[in-house]
Length: 142
Image: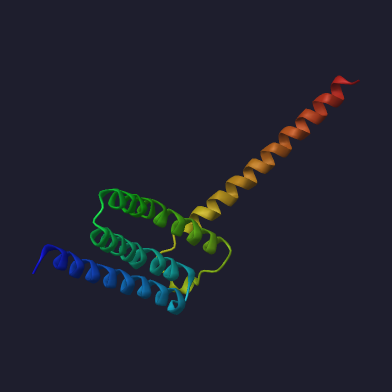
């Protein structure tokens, strides 16, 4: 077997594996019951599927320039995928799209309650200062 035949076979295998993982991610998006499970399905197999697709494409095209570009695509996906999934999951949690009965550990409720208490304290402090400034201005005008 020649080098090109081996490279084409490896490329085909990685492309097919990437397509299958991306398909698994798409099925997970449709089948999972809540936002958090769907975010997991959207990020984990999809990122690995993209990595396999880009590797297969780089092997098939056999160009250093294309390989570097595809490496950048994978790097950006590795950086942005988890962050966007985290932000979408938090937004889904705050808007009530998460089934709390499916959660094993729920640390975000405590954080949100603490933040609400701090917001309320800040609002009360601002009102107190505004009232104090208003009464001081009224005394100065006399």
